[in-house]
Length: 96
Image (cartoon, rainbow, N blue to C red; front, side, top):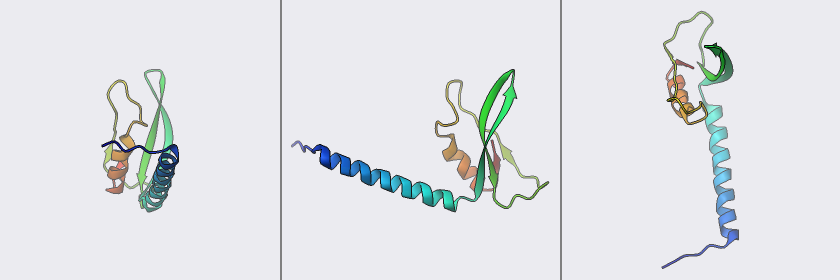
């Protein structure tokens, strides 16, 4: 049995999904226990871009374990590394 949806229902579902996504993003970023900064660094003559995660409560001069994350050869930082990095930062690690 086939169910057909008109464009009106699909649009309503998409709007509801967008509203839920925005709510969750806002809630999770408020509840985050870290700060994320955009940074750039040189590597073999190239400029590399990264996100630098700093756990809340990190005092100047305090040492914490650090994790440097990277994809394989063809992926970029926007391709889901933030899902893992944010969990590590919540646990108190400094993450690049």
